[in-house]
View (tube, rainbow, N blue to C red):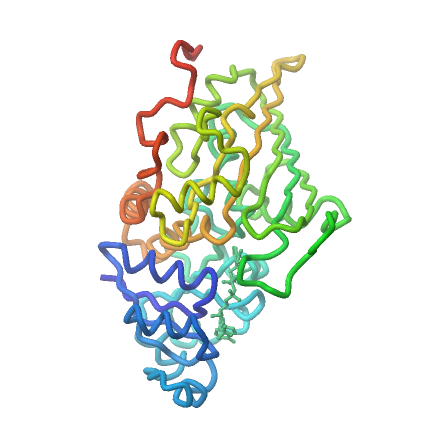
Amino acid sequence: MLRVGINGFGTIGKRVADAVRAQPDMTVAGVAKRTPDYEAEIAHDRGYPLFAAEDERPFAAAGLDVCGRVRQLVAASDVVVDATPAGVGAQNRELYQDLDTPAVYQGGEDADVAPVSFNARANYDAAVGADAVRVVSCNTTGLSRVLAPLDERYGIEKVRATLVRRGGDPSQTGRGPINDTLPDPVSIPSHHAPDVQTVFPDLAIDTMGMKVPSTLMHTHAVNVTLESVPSTDSVRDLLADEDRLLLVPERLGIDGAGKLKEYTRDAGRPRGDVWENCIWAESLTVEPLADGRADCYLFQAIHQEADVVPESVDAVRAITGVADRDVSVRRTNEALGIGRGLAGLDPGHSVRPRDAASDD
Ligand SMILES: NC(=O)c1ccc[n+]([C@@H]2O[C@H](COP(=O)([O-])OP(=O)(O)OC[C@H]3O[C@@H](n4cnc5c(N)ncnc54)[C@H](OP(=O)(O)O)[C@@H]3O)[C@@H](O)[C@H]2O)c1
């Protein structure tokens, strides 16, 4: 059993801890945070050994037992997942290196925090044997999952994506906008394009970012110019075969992120989490261009609190070399129930019109 320490027990860290606990080959060595708030109480309730990121005294004053400082947690771990706020991970790097503990960082860190920027679908093997990896951000994860199969099957000439991002997570009470629609950043490309290139170094991609008054999910409007001309049905079949892409059929009547979240809550997903990209099936459109190219369009929703969680679990297996990609992804998916348990979307349930036939 791999002993996994989780440094930072907020939005991402608490989900990673629960996901690690669900794996047959991993155990939670402990979790660390700074303050004895409701999330510390949750960690305690779940039986996770709790460590103080800085000072134990506030925990003692709140009546919460801690097992020591974060250094002790790292020493007791085979791998550490750093889920501290953006920039804090880089400050922790010396500690992990000092204790010779492989580290999985999150996408809020700069790419140079680790030698590999990681997405399980796109570049699992690049992380095998590395001493540290950075799981790319929620948006980059969402784009990587959909671009990898398109690039492998059809070749990609150019990607143009507009990312309409939630203003903040539900727990981020200080974030906004409250009543506005912001180009964010105003400059083009947004930082997402270079981040995607940390996973696909040769990919031509431009991104535009926006922020809107929502906490639910991000929505991507994606246009991919392909180097060949598949039919819409073949692209739909290709994407429907991917583990972490859900093609949401029109007949379910899911018209936005609100119903997507309601749907996964109804299905009994923990916290209503949506680990997969949700692609609106009827948005998937391929328009042939001259000279053997085609434009592929789609809308997808990305649950920012959840999609990096299975990737973080796979990153743990990749850097420790305990499993290859297929084994790790299958194990993670089975343990979490990814791609399962959603009425109308279980494996084998066609998202295509029943009489449509594939042309390849
Ligand atoms: N939230 C998202 O939508 C999202 C999506 C993808 C990736 N990410 C990335 O994931 C990382 C974590 O983000 P998050 O949203 O989970 O942050 P978060 O909700 O603010 O949680 C951060 C956690 O780290 C703890 N912490 C703060 N300072 C610390 C320190 N010096 N040492 C150890 N722990 C410390 C916090 O504890 P206290 O509360 O006790 O201070 C809290 O438990 C960031 O790199 C972020 O960019 C976030």
